[in-house]
Length: 541
Ligand SMILES: NC(=O)C1=CN([C@@H]2O[C@H](COP(=O)(O)OP(=O)(O)OC[C@H]3O[C@@H](n4cnc5c(N)ncnc54)[C@H](OP(=O)(O)O)[C@@H]3O)[C@@H](O)[C@H]2O)[C@@H](O)CC1
Ligand SMILES: Nc1ncnc2c1ncn2[C@@H]1O[C@H](COP(=O)(O)OP(=O)(O)O)[C@@H](O)[C@H]1O
Ligand SMILES: [K+]
Image (cartoon, rainbow, N blue to C red; front, side):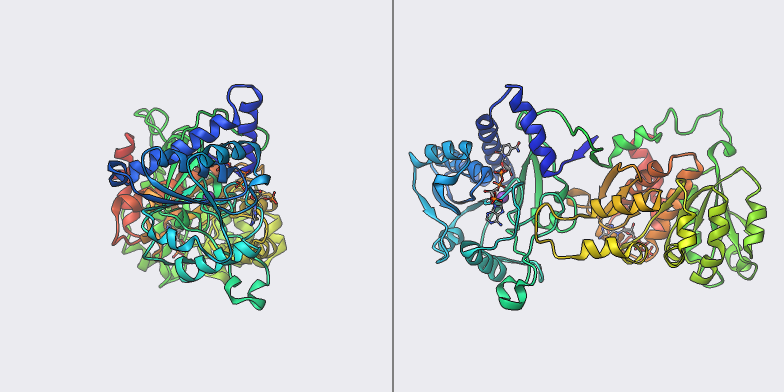
């Protein structure tokens, strides 16, 4: 299980190991610098074959200290290295001071001045090392030096509005975190209101990288928001630390191991002595004629993910349309909440899905009955919009529900939380999608799955995981109509099988991306359920 750390958690792990006397901060800094150099040569083997030119930008903290180590290690390999320091050498923290001194025996340190004397060497270098700020970033680039850097980065290199990257810096490696990016939130810190007085500050500035080498464990901000785009490629270097997060529940990255823990494995998956009712029965409520596709997608996904039976609850007027397109999925006429209540008397119906293509008016009408049934329930799409309208419905949510909002639905459901998340992040650590989803789950009293390429799943007790479709799992072709309906169906199918709501959400989110990734570009929502058998085979199920 991979934990994604906040800056504070990383500091605590480092502090605990140092306090035990097992290692010194100086050792860790040396290993960190070596880890970056190793990763650079792994990524760009051509740089390892002969000596080259590097420009190293060091900041005022230990991230800068790592930069001095890297400068020394490259110099010792015969590289031509120029080092610039942003800050006062007399104020460097102790380990960085030692490494400043060691570097000073080999080369000079220039001040990272407002005049931008460092820009030219940077452009001519074969490698630029960004060791300005790491996990200690507390505010945006905000003073004179930073202004020059900011203006340069903004104009020439990495304008986060346009996403434009400078074509002329060959290779940029970020030490730990791209400078300017908040390691906890994946957001670029920015000065509030600055754009009104100075156009160069109209947004946050971040030194986007081609390669980011982080230490011990990945940080949350490398998987959230703009983090993946700005990190480029992410490598985690082992620097000999151990131990995980204590106290608050850690944020986990959903992976195959997490899924096996949730029961998606051969021995407790499906056994030969079981029959279809052992695997539960999901009821997916369908919309009116012309809107039934979404529920059919969800139903297909529920069946493929292993629910023993799946029934589509269909309004009378849509029965012919739906029936014409079903085979293994069953159909039941459900026109009113009263009929639904009668249908739900059958306790073998183990999970419900309300929302996809359902219609907001009908969702408003059915929601109280669905919630009163106290069955494991996915609320998606129109059900979320209806839920956002009424305090009574919201209060009726129970811990067997799962909410699956995308950003727009999240904003309707939790306007104050969304507003906080939308505020410019002026201080580090900034409020993150993880914080927002945790707050939402606490308020709702049930797991919330907040969609996106950085999907976050949180439970009311603070447990939280990230299922990010980024780096080598990027599947941007998931952004196509109907994939959300498939996700809702996957969750419903897993709920029907008896998965706990948060486990169902995590498992479904992971399989969803895995199926998309396995299918590849050209994917449409219909393909997702059909790709599941391949994913299961790959998992050895
Ligand atoms: N933890 C570990 O296990 C290991 C950590 N290691 C390395 O240490 C790094 C963390 O070091 P760190 O804590 O010294 O923080 P860092 O990112 O260098 O910056 C802090 C300095 O910047 C300043 N500052 C902040 N924002 C600013 C701004 N906008 N503009 C101007 N100044 C600003 C801030 O000032 P202050 O907020 O105090 O005023 C402070 O002086 C970590 O990322 C990794 O690379 C490895 O060596 C080995 C193992
Ligand atoms: N760029 C992306 N990378 C990975 N997954 C994405 C991306 N964009 C959207 N998704 C996923 O696709 C699904 C879209 O769901 P949703 O917004 O409800 O769409 P729809 O209502 O059309 O089904 C979500 O699971 C979301 O996490
Ligand atoms: K950095």
